[in-house]
Figure 1: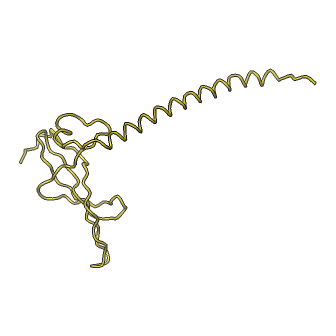
Figure 2: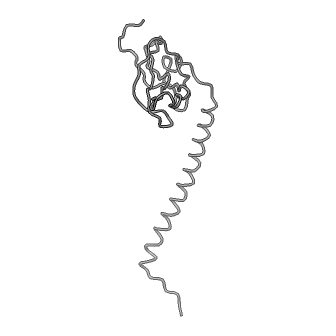
Figure 3: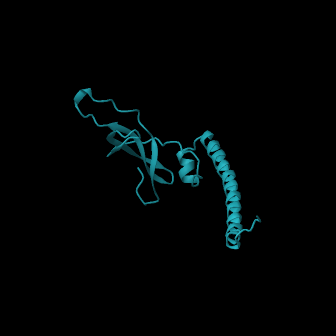
Amino acid sequence: MHFRPFPVLTIIAVPALAALIALGVWQSQRAGWKAELITQFEQAAKAEPLLPEAALCGQTPKPGEVVAPPQGVGPSLRMFGHASDGAAGWRLFQAVDLSCGAILAETGFEALAIGGPGGMPPPAPERRLIAIWSRLGLPSR
């Protein structure tokens, strides 16, 4: 008995093998790229946060840079929303004046007190930068 491969299967198998080798090389390069991104993310997480003036007025923060939450003054704007744990309540926002304009920053969260005085206490306030309002020609205070 002699080995006689079908020519059609050989013609199909050679390009398929080449494609599989190319995909393997691509996956290997992609794994190196992802490892580099993880290293960059870890370095950015350890970096000191930027001050709001430096981050918003000086230059646009680079991806991965941490921005310190600004300190709001004046009355709070309340908007219905959800906390990071899914609890319903009021998200609190305050205007913050900077040298290049004004921003609206989230300064806290008040959970809804459903069920009377025995309800759950509100969680610790979360501070996040959520929107930038700059160069709108608004009068400064």
